[in-house]
Image (cartoon, rainbow, N blue to C red; front, top):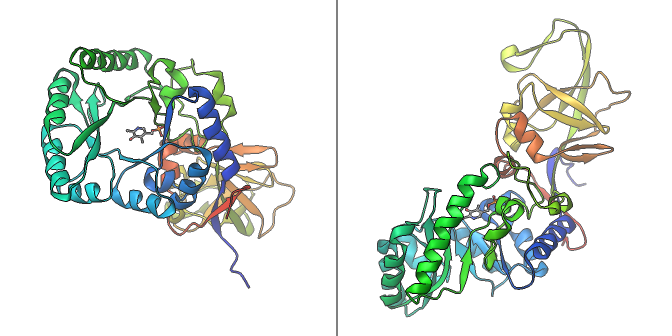
Length: 380
Ligand SMILES: *Cc1c(COP(=O)(O)O)cnc(C)c1O
């Protein structure tokens, strides 16, 4: 007999494929799509998602470490992989050996890659990052040409890409415009200096929705691929945003239903005290599954298609919810923490809102013990 699941994530591969198709529709056939699959493909499971994206027309993968690159290669070879972070000094040789494209911000990094390339008899395509206002990686715009010229003169390196990253594309159109402007100045300077770089890129998901002027010839969506929208203060997004469908659902079960009396308290710290007689369902998921404890007394779940509020502290493996208003609820019933049930929908962004965080964190916080179940025509 199969062991029943207590908490699981369902991934709709058809939604993912459709989201990628809408991104393709947005940018056209000439622009390359780098799908960002860091952090286990935003919690969706890297192997399955990499396979699906390979079949659905991704051009390049973006990763956060070399293990992720290795996993992608174990699924399929032939796709370029860009390391989005800076390589540690002791990662340089591994990156060169494994043919992972590095992101370069400094002459020091460029020299280390050049030496490793020569040592291993390789030619390394590199992407140089320009810091136009994110402040995390990249060379400042005014020093970019010097760095690019040095790279051109170093053996073993090929300038393949030039890119930047927006700090606030979903919130701040003015600052984003300044970032674009700084980046464009570098591109103009490249032209004057006769430096030709095949791939130029800037757009994350938010810029894809809000900044048609930063498509260049490659885009780097993450969140949108998974069907969640980067929500912010800006309301000028393309109409396209309504076509994206979340791929991920997070589900668990009702394990017990009980009645409590006015004045009874619930869970650790006794942060909830019943203001009337109530019916409470205990659910089989908690922060040990990645259901954020910060949603205590705030988050809502779906049971029998209806919204039910979390009562008291979310614990490691179990969570209590108010089911007083439900006509029927029994042990074994499915409860939806993220996703659809009946007429109801709870998105990762909505859950993130209750928890004071962002959908990126909600998705990547789902823990290892939660099995990922794949649905859709490509599910193996
Ligand atoms: C994570 C990341 C992205 C994707 O960001 P989303 O907001 O999820 O689309 C794009 N570019 C870089 C450099 C990143 O680190």
